[in-house]
Amino acid sequence: QVQLVESGGGLVQPGGSLRLSCAASGIIFRRYTMGWYRQAAPGKQRVLVASITSEGSTNYADSVKGRFTISRDNAKNTVDLQMNSLNPDDTAFYYCNGNRWPDSIWGQGTQVTVSS
Image (tube, rainbow, N blue to C red; front, side):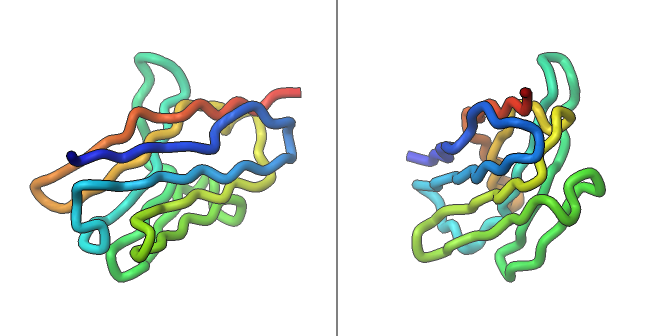
């Protein structure tokens, strides 16, 4: 069964940190580009936060550069997003994505709320 399962979301104060994790099953994980997307509110666009290719090349949205780090463990079939210096603008539902043409697989998402 093809599945991506996110974990690690929650409530954090401004300036705090969270680590999101995504566990993949049912795919040849090492062949996929993995990414984290976020959606600030229902009806708003889901936007790319960070991605990492099968070779380990990374890409970040300008708004998170220097604060977020994406990493993958091909032995464990996981991709993580370390989020530091969080601010209220980072509040969103975060989704894990696995992409290898023509497949695009989404997890169910996890909520991140940054608030004092």
